[in-house]
Image (tube, rainbow, N blue to C red; front, side):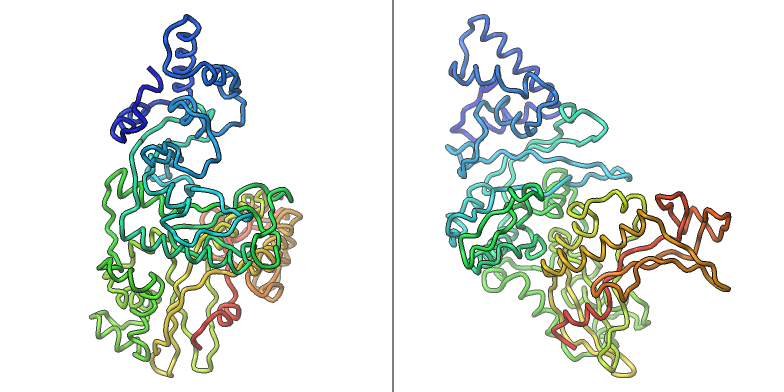
Length: 496
């Protein structure tokens, strides 16, 4: 029978929850309809009449088009309680929070977390709880009943199949980083800067936006000058949830080394301080000396400085477990003798038609910079080799992203939508896309093996399928990618 579990016994809850593995959400609703049919026949039920009537009248049960969340199906139609915004754990007698979250299947067949795991809303009407262990965040993550389903966007959402149900508690080494993330977020709120919060401020625990772009999704802050801030929620990041899926649910132990060898390190220093200290220990050494120290060939190829960055962190390969969980990207910055930075930073290529149809708030660029933190490892030329100046963690400031980058992105999108004009010269094809000089932070430029075009006037050049993609007007242009301007990067550096 539905709702047949002991809400004071964690094993009873888990055993009951496990029964929905391999069921669809529709299957749960079907079982609930059978339960209600038994109630109609006068059978003795294990829920009060008031709740049974609530089940009968719920739109999720009577209409497939109801906009109710899938999580409500788990909570109400399987565990038998009314969904609420209570800050206590869902099953508060045993301190268990029920969370459902999607899994996406990549083209190569690997499974990845479909989205971040929202924990609880950030309050702008009350003072923050400074003690993490007394916070609503801790109350809701200390014991998570994690219900994961395979998301197939081609199906009705009710036909998505629940694949895994497990209890999850962040391990001690992760919890230490989460606690510090909580401090970073709450400190910004206390400073009256909730409007400047970004998911990229932190590592595992983030502050993600929650709600639409409408004015109704903004609230005055409790602190400071009460500047309106967009509604946000505490969340476990998408990258962290992918690690949970791979390491704890699928038990595919990833071949990633840990930077933190001893959890006691995190009791005295933050994760960020540990990272910076490890690299700055080698300050002023040349890249040649570092290659010798770490038994790495000194060959000046592009990977050399990234390799050295990981070696200084005690990582033999180029993947660190903590960086994978936190979505940290390592970038080696090389300055010339005159202090100038020659290189802009590139990002993955994009499809013109996809960019044309994106909304800023959900665009690749916005998502990337609002969730990604960078480790800059900075070297400076001495004429023959490069000296290590130091390292810093960096994420794009909120205003830079939401104003300057947004304006640059919109200008590029508008040109791609309205049509790119091409001009043939004696040795190349020019276009009228916005230039690097048009925006102080971002620009786009070709990112392909060779130039390739197929224009409406009949002109064709290069390998179209390999090096170009189609514009909305049917023409084909060399594939481009976004770049962060080199002079903007230079302004962000602490070491020059």
